[in-house]
Length: 218
Image 1: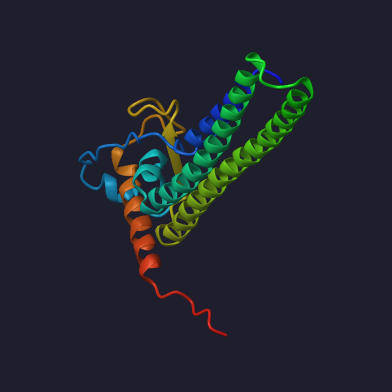
Image 2: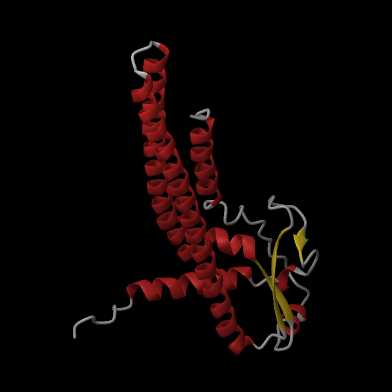
């Protein structure tokens, strides 16, 4: 049987994928509101204006995003724990086999049968771990899509009333708070509608949670 480092590598791979699901976004950079020149803010935010919001800050403080992350983290922890349990059991069985083999406690025929059984189990475990890693990646993708679609839909509805000519989402280039943001590098602070977008998203989410659920009775 091959070196057992393969088993540990598989466990580590799934663990890395699990950690990745937590990192949908780093902490947002935000932006401070500054006092505008008289009349400038009002005219700049009239219909047809170009405004922006900080996606990092929205993702960090959007209640739905945090709730979904919590749910997915719980699922991922369960998957990771089960992969670890199976991997550790296989590792322990292999170590016990090697110990008996080294002490001459097994006949050649028995050792061959047990070795083949362990190899078969390792192959099955590798396939199982790979499947669980895909499940983790799918959970992450679905979570991201749900969050981003909710933001997109709300901004569309929000702008139907505001009628801005463009609403831009800006994020930190390297994920570090206070670093360069893109695509908006520099802009007047009153063009930043992050707080409005975030407040509206959370208000809508709270209402959706308190709304009566559709009846499932036939």
